[in-house]
Amino acid sequence: MKKIYVTTIVILSLVLTVNSQDIKFGAKGGINFASASGDIKSTGSRTALHFGGMAEIPLSTEFYLQPELLFSSQGYKVANGTGTLNYLNLPIIGKYYVNEELSIEAGPQIGYLLSATIQVDNINTGGNTNTPTTGSSERATNAKSSNANSSAVSNNAIEQDISNFFNSTDISFGIGAGYKLENGINISARYNFGLSNISSDSSENVKNSLFMLSVGYFFF
Image (cartoon, rainbow, N blue to C red):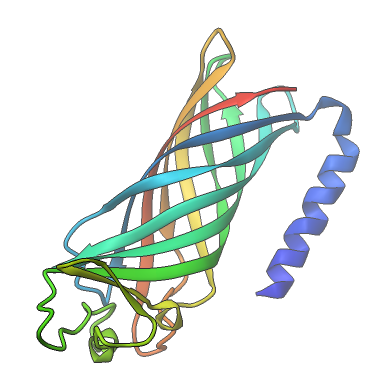
């Protein structure tokens, strides 16, 4: 996985060197609708935020490369709780401008897991209630609410670190579209579907799923 990061950085460095005079830099942020699929008893999506920086590198009149560096709060919902997976994501997006305003985009994304927690609702404080499963093998159900890595967030809920149940990196692919307003504000929608298994248990197959709505602006 380190080779992937190194290769990505080298390619970006070469592109930046060649096109440094025409590169635009900006910032973006927006809403995530995140879930997980595969060997996980997901019951819905988790709504959260993403934000970070981006650049737009011209390759031709219509084609551009848009690398981004984003903090992205993702996760999933299960029957009696919500899992939170926070990532530092590096998308490398190719953009094609249909006209001056409308663009379509696609490209790979590499994510590094910053933290993983689960908040379990409706805890019976008088007993040892288990955390929800993160996969079909129900590994996470062995972690009790009395675990040293757990902390109460309310009288009826508990939050627990589940980082050891997930791989440190995630690879996905995004497709979407964007629209540039006259004032320079960019509005975009993108769907990222997971390509790699995020579960640390090789007997399970769990993948991220993410729909993003973003607003961005290139400052210079």
